[in-house]
Length: 265
Length: 196
Image: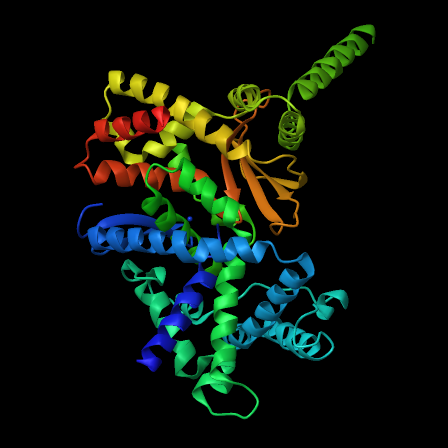
């Protein structure tokens, strides 16, 4: 039971990190997702069930996560920044192996340097000293993204209870963390070290989710108030966000396919 | 020789005139950002702010174009009557959601940093919504329709790489598909949103 709870917390907050953007009938509604300017279709398997789970998650958010995020927002700015920095620094232990797996050797080197500097001079990552020395923060990478860059397609889109939106590929990616792919998990939960406790790991995962939610309180509210089908909006935003990250695209011009717009000219 | 000079003067003035008529997409964004900022930080009542923001949107956004884009493949099967009804509904829907999204911001600081011409019809203007104590900075790119260089219009906002027009399109598509392709279902949802 304890193990199950552990996996639940890990995947939940893994999903929170994955969805860092601010966004039916049964069976198969297709949502477009871009890859190298070709339109791919991601199937929303079991949409009516997904919508039910989505409503449950919305309820949980209203009762648990949103109030927590609002409370967190009331903390002084330096405490929030420090927390955010610690979480971001720890995230490097997943980003670095994924940089290597994706062939981003320069990024892997930079992130390793950032991790070393911020963990020592930055006092366990509270202060982002590396940025001060000109080592700018880089994009996060995870195992789902790595699978994507290797050409593994998304599979079905679905919504997990508590865990939120995902695809088959991203869920497999999240599982890789608990199967040895996350060094922070390995030293806290998987192996019995005398330096860290299991609770350290869960605390950082929960803080990560709360920090993310707090940074997006207004965006979520705005989306909720102006959307005519919130479920569809979140699905679209999630898939767009994942595709952009997998393609490692910074410029909007690279993410665009003008074909749809051509039709209305 | 005199004739040549005259031709040269006329040509140069025509060229300059033409240049001055074309509006730079970055200028368009800077202009509307400044205008919206003045409205938002004013002490006007919310209703008055909404009217002014809607006026800015009607002048600078291709609402009709976005509306047709948002319909996706369904626009091909629409009758003329349905098209007219939809355009009217979408315009009201767009303005309501646009102003309600913006009116909560007191003084958003948006800085235009660069622009890139994709083709004759589109230019992307890159900007940053500066961070506040509540949220980090946000990258916002604007897709500007420049077919008529004298009147460039906004067609999409890409927030941190996520296209709002595309999200809208997939949202509308979901409503229509989940009602067996019935466009009236979308009209009904839009009407309900407007009276909310």
